[in-house]
Length: 307
Image (spheres, one colour):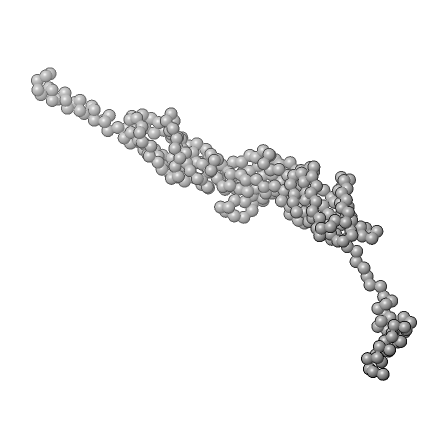
């Protein structure tokens, strides 16, 4: 008998035809043991998008598995054996600034498991009343939020606001700076952005405004205001205004021997600071020379015997 025929006879007679309990310790253990079976389950749900009235959810799926998404309001949404690897679903007609609790049930071969989670809809900042000065911001924003911060690109760093109910306030801010105000809600130790709004503060007023009168013109100068400013508006009452980016300006084309009321207003973008007023008086060398010319002519005429 050849060696290959002998091995085949050995396998047929002693392994395949032998009773299960005589196959040896290794094979017997493998046949008698039951390997643990893991049922597919949704271990996490990702909130991919939030606005004031809608939420978009996403989770991974498994073959031959049904899903039921249940809202705390009682609304149920069924997904029967979805063919894609991921399910993305948007839930609309929700209330702004509201916490919603969800339960995702998945059923596989009559075994049901669940995954519970919560999220929150956003709020609107733009429609709320905002009050701001050169150093403070106040707002009343309805909806859920637990903290608010303000940040400007000039200084950097966040300024924490005081939140009391639906009201928030900031103080000791930089005049004329543009602040990005953000509202957050802490949900399960996660800081969720609820809304953001941009506010430009009132620039500080110019200081040490002075005026020097000249021939048919006046020269104005002032000290740079504290904080941020982009331009200054110089307005001559009854004539017009002009924008300057310096701390001085000469206004020409005025009438001689006349007093003009002039204001200088600091600007930060489109936001105006307080007006600073001064009175300027123009002079003219011609006004001074006319009496002298008259006297000289009278003297000349007298010497010529006309008087």
